[in-house]
Length: 214
Image (cartoon, helix red, strand yellow):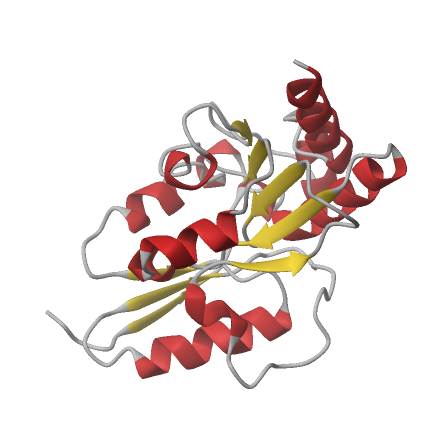
């Protein structure tokens, strides 16, 4: 309808808690991103949430969804930037120490995992960078040169999201590594679920290292 309707949703991933497998969304983000003219935001912390809220308010001719996490998340950024870093849909939140061999792309609660994985790779002598992707739609709206600059030229690209892969290939490529879900979730505490399904910093680092060697 071209109206500025803002939906603030929570319980956005398998980490929502012990409410049963029917409450463990794995396809919701992909389904929402498939809706024409809808902006889907999945912020990583309070600063990104504020920036995404601003962008939703500014989008006067399209509805928006803010997909927020139930669990506590680390504060990755400490201040708002004047140019609103989320406005490009994706941006480098952690730079590589040297020429990046691995680019890790993540959204929401998984950005913190990506930053931890980068630290592990750095310790192993593999320079890695992390790109937060709060909005696929805004990233897609960029011109090709801007998208290419954000994606970078690291030989290994890894996508991390506690959901299905659908939609991620436009960022990581069909040969990129995806750490996420391939089936339904389960009922357990969030930390146990992430370990059970292999969505951990160690798993991300190992997958990146394995692809780099292969």
